[in-house]
Length: 269
Image (cartoon, rainbow, N blue to C red; front, side):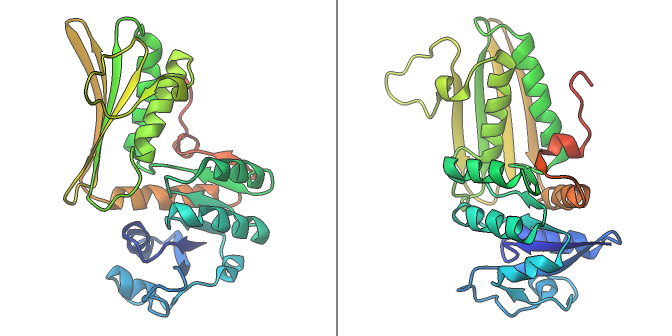
């Protein structure tokens, strides 16, 4: 059985991971981490997640990472650097589901991946993993001069980063398919006098209610539109994917991985 430490265990995703793991015979949550000022410190992770008590208390002490086989981080972007450094020091692999972290954290992740296995997953859904590859293939096949790309995403009112990490991953896949750098063609919300330029990849964002997550990529041409999308109706799909990713990552050699590695996606498959 693979032992998991959940960083950000008090959040929606952290609690969902505890619930999924509680139904598995392959993985077990042996540590749950939260910030030192969390009111949930000391509570049982199972009771916090709405399942039977697991005999594991929420803690803020990263030293517990030494006891796990793999960590899953769904805390917040501001804590990513510290969490990666702690896993690196403990020589433990980590699945990073947190999004919105700063560019300098990317370098820290790459440095850590030379010593431990790191899996960065802005979205742990198997369906979204396939969607990213479909977008890459469509962008490569459809001529940029004839098809405009627009990415729309919607999430619940409390999501902080925008566009979402998944939307950005879709944008990078589209840009990769066209052989361009996303940063050079990205366009945010359009307002006022803002006619489209050839080759742009546009983003639009919706925040409201309790929307779990919706992403649509439009390839709009003259007389036709190709729409590729994914809609999540239950947050448990992300928790299931995260647990699957953690089980896959445990015991892997040092390196940087993604969900496409977990699902075994091969180019041209």
